[in-house]
Image (cartoon, rainbow, N blue to C red; front, side, top):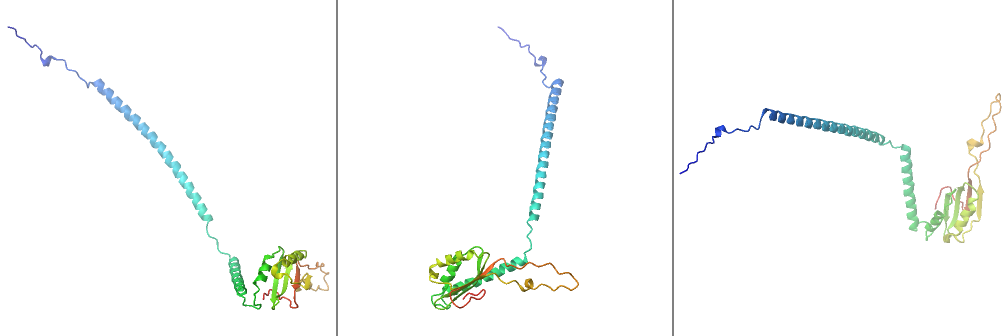
Length: 229
């Protein structure tokens, strides 16, 4: 018979040591190096973010400055009293003209057929440099009288030709026509008297109005200044 004898004793087996002092030192050094690299990278990133934040802050400050400048320039200005009065007067004149137009359209004045067509014809024939200061339409025959001014006398024939082409004015003949320059105002016509001891003042050039005045009548009645009937 045979018998096996086990001569192995665990106490005599050589043990392997993994965490030796050199290995632990290397591990600590590697961890320290990684920590330093991470800290350097984080610090660099933080510096970049701080620079970006400073740039954005500077841009915001500049934008705020521009906004304040624009707001200061947009301060509402005080209303001009003269402009307000002119607008009010213009609106009053417009209301008055609309009222006159409404009356004329309703045939409530003079001629039973109304005078709106005559005023429409006059309104259509506008000539630059020529304007009316008085219009009169009277009677069943609608006798017309016009008074106005023009910067040049040569504008009047063209204006009359335009009126002659209007159907409502065909057959109307202006039998009386007056054209001339207005008289000088009193202050321009009368020169101040010079003192006997002083030399005579220089001659004042004669006053010449920058426009001519004209009167056109198809009847004996002359149109009054600024009237419309």
